[in-house]
Length: 422
Image (cartoon, rainbow, N blue to C red; front, side, top):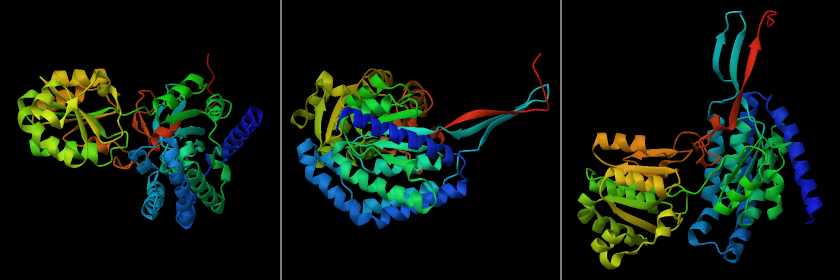
């Protein structure tokens, strides 16, 4: 597609989204919920078409070099489509954040000030691989009163288009504009730059995907960016850990779904329990097909069951059945490792020592820090948010699972009786 035509199409999407957002912001909670329920019904009604579109994407997956974990993220079946529709209905059942009075006070001159939660406006979301993001992002935006422009990756273009078509059909059936949810129908890289520079219509842009995608958005963006960066997540097994619990958590954090951002990529083990813990957890992991890469002390304990880790391994988000392991001398050394090599996403300590746990929770500067819990619970659904736009590793505006509240901003309403400033 020619550059001029591409720019024209994306600007047109932005213009329509802005108009749709203004109308959506005035809709009642009941009307938005009715639209979401219609969207859920439309997804299920289009199930066969969505699966057929997904098959086309899966057939093309080898040409994109997708590994097994990436293919799993891409794949949809009847059960996953039903789960997608159920997720839409769960979002509809959540309280509407818009219109919430955050704070209200009266000044000495009688002027009343209200801090009110309101929609952001138009949200641009650029993502890769996982087509369920199309539904999650769209319905969270609609529930919070925002229009959205979605740009998925080439590996899921047919699936994303089928889902977006169903969502728009549901919106129209409920009497709302089809433009509240728009999917960029092409995957030209130039489209990312054009979206990121469309500050006239987009209020915020949210990239979630690989390092290259996020860096490209950050480089070109003219509006605020909320980054959903890679997840180099850790589990630290303290010297006071219940080792059976630690094994259960470590196996779950790595193996339950290895191709997602909250899966564990590095296991840290206190030296006092390494000799006992490492052989048992290594067997459990290797039985599930995990390749182990360890520091010198890990390799001394595990021998041929682990190969030597490189410096690069400590910063790698494998998104696959590969795990780095390091033996540490203390909780402080574990925290130092996480702060040096981690991505401030999700990190966990397993220990029966409350003082050690509290120190870890306070010292680790990540979006989510866990005590005796798998990192896999860093998720909008698991937090009770219904779904999520993604997991923000930023610190401003949104951090961690980004749900309805994070898709709002606020404004001040000031009422008076004729006050003037002197």
